[in-house]
Structure formats: structure tokens, C-alpha cells
Picture 1 (cartoon, rainbow, N blue to C red):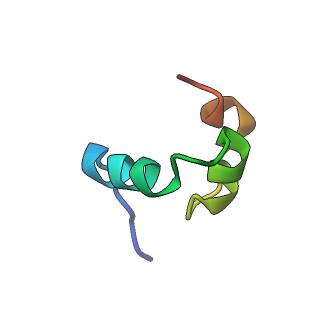
Picture 2: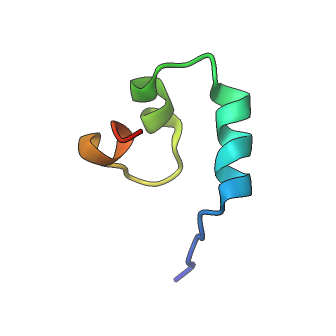
Length: 42
């Protein structure tokens, strides 16, 4: 069982690569399941 750790650097890279997409599109691309509530924070 592997554990993935989210770091600020990893998230920043993800946003940099996918910054032209909507939050909904980014949530679909995120490698782990993410809730609507979590994806709408910010």
C-alpha cells in the first residue's frame, strides 16, 4: 500500500501545468479522488 504525500511544491507544479483548466477539470485530473467540497475551497 503506497502513501502519497501532497506537498505545496507538488500542488504548485500541478496548478502551473493545469492552470488553464477549470476547478472541475483539475479535480478530474487529480490523481486521487477529491470531493466537490474540497475542490471548491480557496
